Length: 84
Image 1 (cartoon, rainbow, N blue to C red):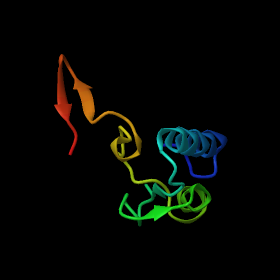
Image 2 (cartoon, helix red, strand yellow):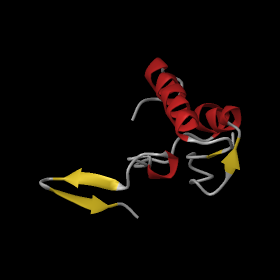
Image 3 (spheres, rainbow, N blue to C red):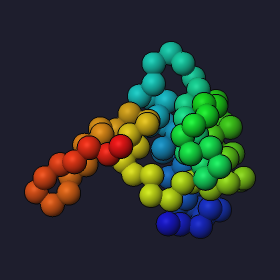
Image 4 (tube, helix red, strand yellow):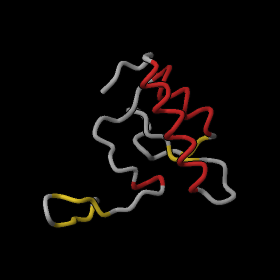
């Protein structure tokens, strides 16, 4: 919810890409979460960074990062549900 060029947003993008690259195996390409790509296309982390910060911004509501290594289970009140 931060502005794209704010320090918090840019740091969040860096943290996100670092998390994703640590969760991935040998393949360096990761799904791009920008508004235009919507996790449909794989790119090098630097391209994803540029899409998220410079060009398009992140898909709002992409949480948890289920396409990027986080669990598909999300706590909702006292139950867990699968995010599809």
